[in-house]
Length: 201
Image 1 (cartoon, rainbow, N blue to C red):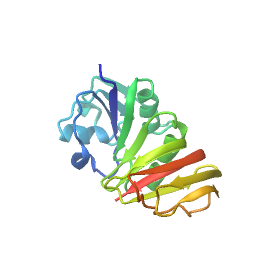
Image 2 (cartoon, one colour):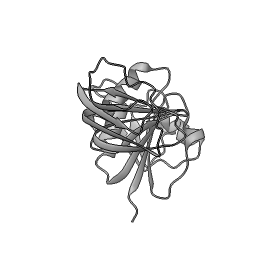
Image 3 (cartoon, rainbow, N blue to C red):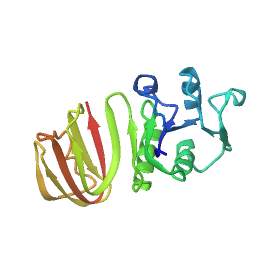
């Protein structure tokens, strides 16, 4: 059995319809307003999560439903990720988490940090965002720019980039690593602590 790709669809700016490619081993989670997006695209929902303040409860058709109280301490996405990380998976992709609500977007990035040991990325039409630490590689792709932001002060090394770094001390308030570019086939990165990576077209 191939391991699941979990796809979580939120209620932000809708890029899902343009980005979605079905996988035979996918597990689909609709988060509140994201349920309507999935329904409009005729995508079967495995799990629906939300307080359903942005859609009517009667419209929710899913194999499983987690109904949340409207007064709660966690975002709908936080609950969806708790459920997703309990399922064996290869990766988790979050759609429609960017857009007008910058507070929700920033909160989604914090969730990436919280679940750093899982392979999770937030995607929209032009960007891919994820959090990593330790040594990792980024293959050259159609994302032209790669930016790195420290979540905690960290030493960072970059090789195969237009602007390489050797054990540079990157603080949380330092934007030095904005808009770098991969110049070889692979960009090699080492960061002692978690960093936010944004690949952008």
